[in-house]
Length: 149
Figure (cartoon, one colour):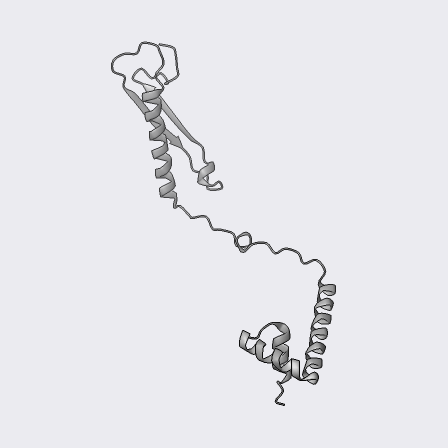
C-alpha cells in the first residue's frame, strides 16, 4: 500500500488540506491501520500542545486598536492665517452686533461707528490663548454699550 508521509498527515490534523486531499486521506486511513494510528497520535500531540499553550498564556489582554496607538497630528495653521481668521471673526461679530444687537431705544437714522482692534502677541502662549480686545465707539466717543450721552 502506498502511504502518505507525516507532513501530509500533520496538514490533515491541522485542517490545512483541500477537500480532495481530505477524501484521499480518509479513504486511506480506513484501509491502513498503521496510518490511522499515526493520525490519532498526531491529533493527541496537537491537542496536548494546544492545552499547554493555553495553560501558559492564561487570559490574553485585549490589544488596543491601532487608531489609539497612533496619535493623529493636528494640522498646523500658519500664524498669518490665524490672524486672518481672528480678524474675520471679529468683523463677523461686529456685523452681528450692528444688525441684530440694536436696542429698543430710538437711535438716529445714521450712526458712524469707529472700531479698533488692539492685541499684543505673547510669544509664550499659543495664538488661540492670546487676548484680543475690540473697541467700538460712535462719533461722540461713547462705547457701544455706553448709555450716557
